[in-house]
Length: 377
View 1 (cartoon, one colour):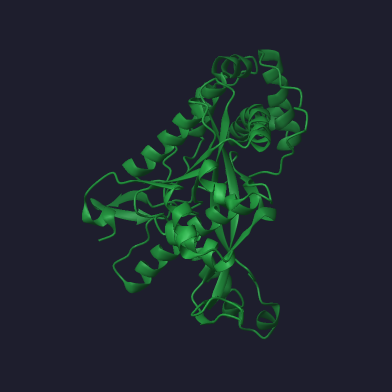
View 2: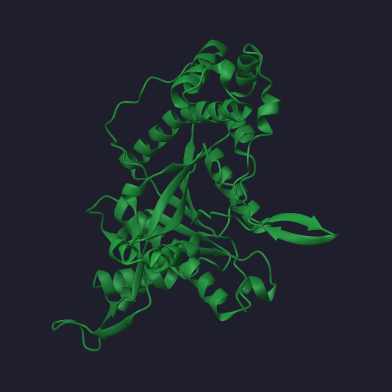
């Protein structure tokens, strides 16, 4: 989560008036985008509108994080491979109580807000009912004033963009991030390192009999991007944190200077494949392996993020069930269960039975269909 201090006094809220919104919008046009209003394109105006709404929500979001940091209430962490969020602008205007104010403010500048909505690109983070349900759940949690956070993957190309040629479907990449997203807030300083592959070796002297140490074969970094999830006009703004995969060393200058340009960026390409698309084709062994990498990547990032960033440094993990419930949305994130066991047993030295007792009490699971493919069969 963003770095906050529980004792930080809240910043003065922005004015919920037509005049105040107009002022904030024009400030964003000039100082956020660096253009004058009469020279701004329709897309510029859309970006300025989205960022203005985001600024209104930001104060509530930070205050919710400060309150949570101060009170340490139990949190629901919703782990899902997809979140079909839909258009963010209209939803956030409505939730923030800004829909009528924004419409009137833009009309005063001779701007039709309905025309600007056409420039919004929906986040390519979900596909169908599973993703829509996940989006509805995190929206409902915010509206019910429940402290919660959604965790998933920031897919660079979503699932696909459907076109037709000679009556046949042709799948194209869904480049929904081509112009960037005004709703996401990157936090590369909070990157999490995730290990893959490798082998095990006998544990150092003094470890329990038979214990072994994992020696990873390679690692990637998970870069978090935060989205705000506002409740409906109740002041609560929760978080959706999505992970983007990057290489720990994206570029090898020595190899590049030797003339092997493709090899110089091989590690970057290999790592970034993890967060390229939702549900990569899995009819090949490589596709199956990539799907498993995706599932492990985002749950490993999410568990470590909560344990090391959200919880106070001295928090006793024996009390973890009092602080968190990880809700597993279908089978994709269930690898979080053995991963938590690994963190507790291998990295913190807990006995198996003690770790298993805590693990059983912090996870909940929902399966939405009995179809074999949904059960990982």
